[in-house]
Image 1 (cartoon, protein in one colour):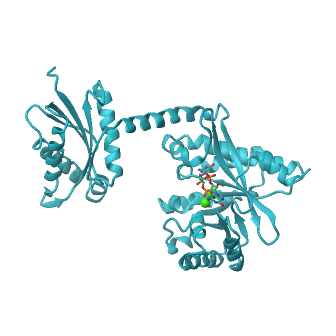
Image 2: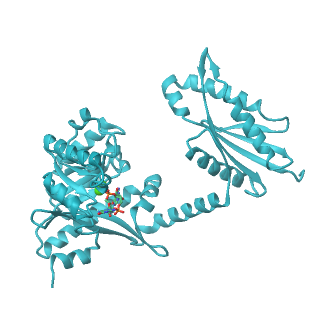
Length: 399
Ligand code: C2E
Ligand code: CA
Ligand code: CA
């Protein structure tokens, strides 16, 4: 109405959950009230401060003469947060991440402005919090891109755009293929074959990993049986499981169903789980792993060395195999420390009675070192990259 710029601030408290968890919800509520009051003190008469939900506040600035003026207010908020919040004689230091969207350049409707301020808040949060960010065209574009990818991903299964590649694991002493790892690919109609790095996180955020993971398991078992039917000796098949799948109470029943329906020998199935997955909720995960193991399948600890395996917990884990993360192998020639780490991981696996696989082996020197340290099962470009099943078949059954 006034023809002036309007600003929306999306204010999200950093790490508020920690306080809520530690001090209880009543204290959290009182603290939110104190924050609301402090925020109200930072704005001018015609402005509005609202609680949007949880630990999120929205501020509507209606009388901006220039877009820069919004920064004065953001600065006022940030400096007011430098004083502790006192609730029931207890002092709390809080920071907030603030996203900024301006009318009309960042949106024409309230919904659009709030959405874009939220996007900007995420960008601010990504820089470790306690900061602010303006909404930008790139942000809007990448959010749109992500949205498009998600809606395509929803259809990818039924449109049969998902495929599995298989990477052989080789026994380096004999040169024989000792197992396979199933690795997901998405044949995107426009972007070509996408690696999981570009979409696994999206499948986890949307929960799509649950049906997709089931498809992966089913397909990997079917392919292994197909290879076997061609006269290829049965090989262990490794399938990756994400943290979300492990939290699915139906997982053991689904695995059981796939094994029953395909007739795949459970002793040839290995589930790969990363350390970080396990240590998010160790007791529960250990229970699930035990249930899976009772079906006869094996458990591999993937990307070992990159998470936080407390040694005390490690001995409680029902693991059959440990996979050394490829990052330790990359600088094996340059770094004595990396050599020492790899050596120790191998010893650790031996003392736990677990098998060991080295992953991401690309060079002769890496292989020589691993063989010297008695690590024989090798997965990496040195032998084979992940391959589509037809190509693998040609390797197994040369004409
Ligand atoms: P990961 O389980 O650690 O798989 C190994 C990754 O290392 C694969 O990447 C593989 O292509 C790559 N790699 C193998 N050898 C070498 C090498 O010599 N050098 C280098 N630089 N890389 C090598 P990919 O296929 O892109 O998979 C990435 C990650 O995506 C996997 O890491 C896994 O965490 C995840 N992923 C793949 N398929 C699935 C799936 O079906 N379900 C779930 N939940 N996650 C999956
Ligand atoms: Ca893996
Ligand atoms: Ca790995």
